[in-house]
Length: 269
Image 1 (cartoon, one colour):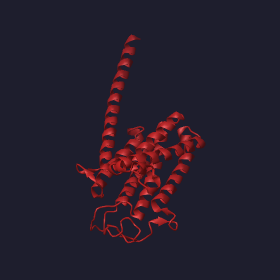
Image 2 (cartoon, one colour):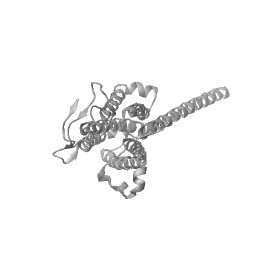
Image 3 (tube, rainbow, N blue to C red):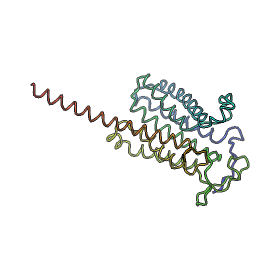
Image 4 (cartoon, rainbow, N blue to C red):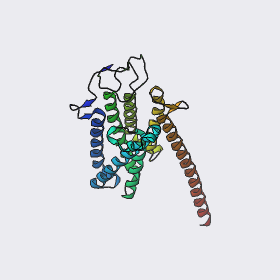
């Protein structure tokens, strides 16, 4: 598969990544505003939260990027604020953006379970759009491969020009996010019945597993065999696992206490 398009869209005005991310985010915001009544908010309140989430996502994405490349930014710390030079971590955008969104939604009195579900779907849609932009521009570099779906970038302005056939890492991530989106939509009622309010946990866990595997065919610096995104994936999985275990334990404890109280109350009647 050969891609020979200019990585800058609209006559060189915007990179494909930026263009498709903006388009995806705009569509996601419009959709979630239409869903505002399902989580007890008005469209205007939802729009306000969405704008704040964009800022949180940009901040988180930049922060995690700087941490990942701390050696470079330690020498030129002022470039931390050169946002026009690029440099965003998707993990940072997702983690900080989700946290900021839930915090603002709680302060606004939203139904957090319903809001978290729609936020998750909207976030995955934006990831799909952004990673497709990366794929077109050749922003995410994969290791060399001779597999039938290996991608070669023939445009001289592409970051991956001259690398040869490589794993389409950005496309892998777009397909991962799309698959999670389809599963969460298709099996929503079953998942909610078995694990109420678990949509965002399942999405983060599934994405973490995918990023952990994709990291093995990604060109990036590693520490003890894993790159930065893989370490973050492991941390996310550990946190979700601990949360699920504690939630399950508390459910059993509370359930046992409830049964005990009911039994005692019945005896004293």
